[in-house]
Length: 199
Image 1 (cartoon, rainbow, N blue to C red):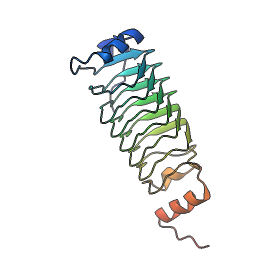
Image 2: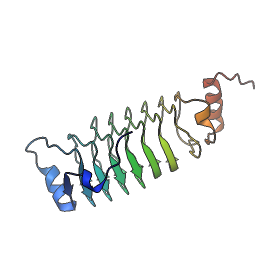
Image 3: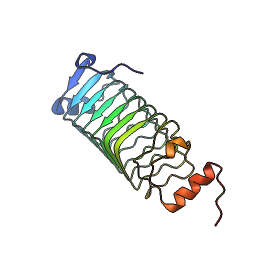
Image 4: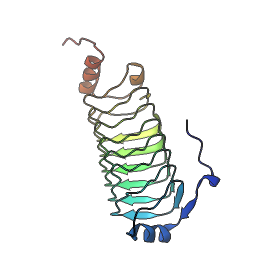
């Protein structure tokens, strides 16, 4: 398991104005591993930096593109993501605390070994994404897509997928305990587990 991020971890800190200027500068790639961003707003920004072990606190991401970026072992506290593109993004071993994702494209993203606490996903597409060995605490899900997503070794207790698409997900019997599904989803999961359902 990665080390906990502490105040001494971060080698660069940015506040709202400095961060905005930083990402408007197109002089070339920068090393941002271990940076910290507080109360920053990002709009229509394409991230093409190494961003692992980075802390974002009280930040807003609006129509940003994180495709194939590396955010592993990062922390997102009280952050909002609106209509962002996260295709293939690596969020493994990250922590999302009081985070909100709305209208985002996160297919093929890697959330493995991440922790979600008091978070919400609304109209987020996570098709073929990995949620291997994740933990969820007070997680709200609304009209999302998890087609062919992987949830092995992830307890789904307390999650409500009833208005989302979970076709062909990969999950074990023990992980399904306590999850809320609609009738069609429950039948599909039963078949997935080799249960024969007679009508």
